[in-house]
Image 1 (cartoon, rainbow, N blue to C red):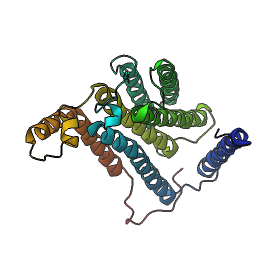
Image 2: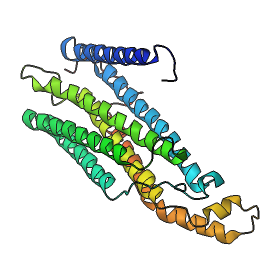
Image 3: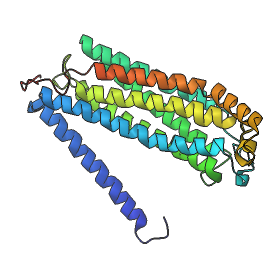
Image 4: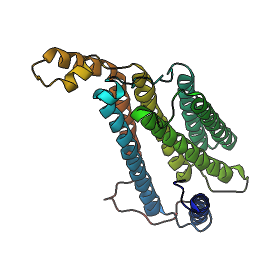
Length: 300
C-alpha cells in the first residue's frame, strides 16, 4: 500500500478502531433508549432530523460520482477515442447479472417494508422474518456483485470509465454491507422475547435502518440506469462533434445531442420525481415539527 512501512497494519488497526467505536455507539444508543428511558419525544425528533441530514449528505456523496460520469460521457475526450465507453472497454451487459441484482435488491426493500408493517401491527414473528430475509438478500446481492467484479473485462485502472464504475458500484456495495449490519443489529434487538426495544409506538432504530435501506435501493436504481444501461450504449449521437467542433453554428449536432439526452434520461427523471415524492412523504410523517412545543415525557 504505497510502499509505506506498516501501512497495512495501520489500515487494519483503523478498521478495528472503527468497528469498536461503532459497537460502543450502538450499545450506548440501545441502552439509553430501551433501559434508561432517555429517548423522549424531543430526543427522537432530533434523531429523525439527524438521520435525514445524514442521508442528504450521502446523496451529495454519490452525486459527485454521477457528475463525473456525466462529464466524461457527455464530453468524451480524444484520449478515450472520442466515444463512451472508451475504446477497448467492453461494458458489462446490464440485462444479465445487473438486472437480476436490481430485482434482488428491490425485493429486499419490499421485505423490510413488510417487517415495518408487522412491527406496527404487533406481529413480532413476521417482523423477524422480514428482517432476516432482507439480510440474506443483501448478502446475495454482495456475493453477485463480487462475482461480477471477478468476471469483468476491465479493472479500476482502465481509463475514467473503469475508475468511475468501480468507485460507484464499490461504494454502493459498501453501503449495502453497512445497511445489512444495521438491520442485523435491529434483528438482534427484536429476537429476544423479553427485550422491549421495539414496541408498536416506539421503534425509531428500525425506522432509521428502513430509511437507510430504501436510500440504498434508490441509489442502485440510478446506478443501474446510468452506469450500466447508459454506460453500455456507446457514444452519444453527435456528442463528440458538438464538443470538439469550434463552430457553434452546427445546430444539427446540438439537436441530435439534446434529443439523445432527453430520450435516455427520461427514466432517470422519473426516478428523481419518485425519490422526491418519497422524501416528502417521510418528512410529512415526522411526529412533530421543530417549532412546535415538544413533550419531554417518556414515550417508551
